[in-house]
Image (cartoon, rainbow, N blue to C red):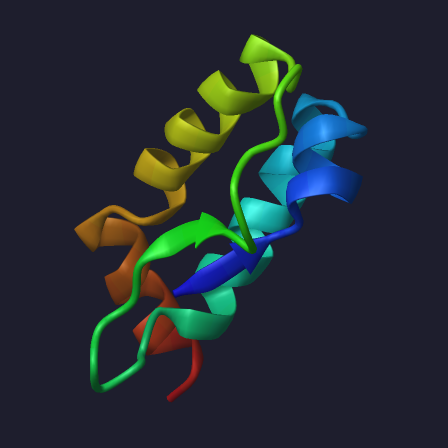
Length: 77
């Protein structure tokens, strides 16, 4: 499970912060032999901007798709 910071990024950050953090987490965990689940480091704080939650989901789908993961695998060879 990968940790997008719940306070610093999700609650206090903007959508660009969310994008950067989601990408970093997926880039680090994509080749785990046990699989990988993108998540926040804890619960999403009450009052988190909906735009940040939407961005988390959007960028998780974008950076976590099969084509992107194949690209990452080829980059590390």
